[in-house]
Image 1 (cartoon, rainbow, N blue to C red):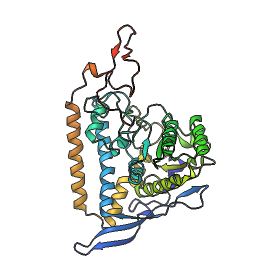
Image 2 (image 1 turned 30 degrees about the vertical axis):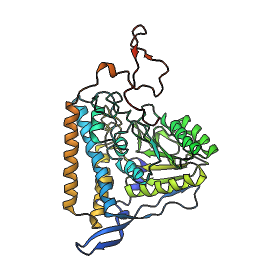
Image 3 (image 1 turned 180 degrees about the vertical axis):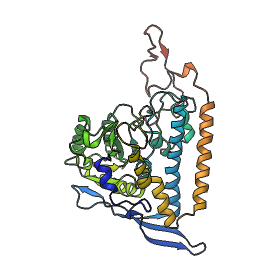
Length: 402
C-alpha cells in the first residue's frame, strides 16, 4: 500500500506531464534557432507554518542553468548506480546508502547556496560530496577504500568531506546539533552565511533535534533545518512512526515550509527564500522536502519487504525528479533531445572512467593510517589495537574546515 504522504502528492499527477507544475508560463526565444534561452515554470504550492508569505511558485530558468541542473541530477544518479554495482561486486564493503530518487533535494538546495554557506548531512552523502566539489572519482575511490578517495579511503560511504561540507555522519540525527553549532559560528563570526542541516524523517522524532530547535531559536542562529522525508525510516513508514507527519511544523515556534522534494526548481526556490529569511536576522527555519528513495535503506536492505514493487514503479513513472525535469526543459524548448543525449553520454563516460580508476587505485600505506586524525594533535601517539604498541600521529595536509 502506498503511504498516505505519497498518495496525497501524487493524486493529481499524470504519467505524461508530471503534473500541473510542468506547465511553462513563458518563453524567451533565440530567433536564430527558435529555441528558448529562458523559460518560466510553476511549482506546486508550498505549505507554510507560521509564515505570512512564502516562496513564489513561479521560477525563471535560463538555458545554462537548466543544463547545469540536469547535469548534476544525472551525474548523481549514474554515480549511485555505479556505487550499487560496486557493492554487489563486493568491491565496496561496509555500509552503503544510496540517494537515487532524492537527487532533486540536494541539487536544488546547492543551486541556491552562496560561497559562504555550509552543509552537513547524514549518511546518504555521496551526492552531496560531489555537489560540494569532489569529482566522481573522489567519491567512488573513497567507497572502494583507495588512496584517491575523498578521505584517502579511510572514511568510506558515510564520512566524506570538502570545503564547507561537514559530512557525512554515521550516527542517526547526530549531525543536527553539529549543524546548529556551525550556524552559530556563522553568526558569531559575522560571515553572513547559513548552515543547511539535513536529516531524515527517521531522525525527526529524536530528542536532540528538539533540543537544538530550542537553542537555535533562542539565539536566532542562521540554520536551515531540512527534513528529507522519503517516506520510510529504515523499514518503517512515516505513518507508522510519527503521530504527526507534517514535519515542516515540528519546529513549533520555528517557521516551516513544505516543499515538493521531487521538483528541483521548487527546492531551489524554497532554499533561496530560507536563506533570505535566516540572513535577515529572523533565526532558523524548517524545510520539509517530500521525496522518495528507490533503493532500500542501505544496500543490505532489498527495500521490498515493507513496500511493494508496484509502489516503487509508480513513483518512478509519475514523479521521478530527473525524468520530470528533463520533460519540462524539453517541452520549454530550453534544450534539444540531441543535447540531452550528448550530456548523458558524457556523464556515462565520466562515471565509467571513475569506476575503472577506483577499482585499480591502491590503498594508502600503513604509516598513513594514523595520519591527519586531529587538526591539533596534543598526543603524538595514537592507540593501536592494544595500548602497548602505539602508532605515531602525522600530518600530511591541512585540515578541511578547521
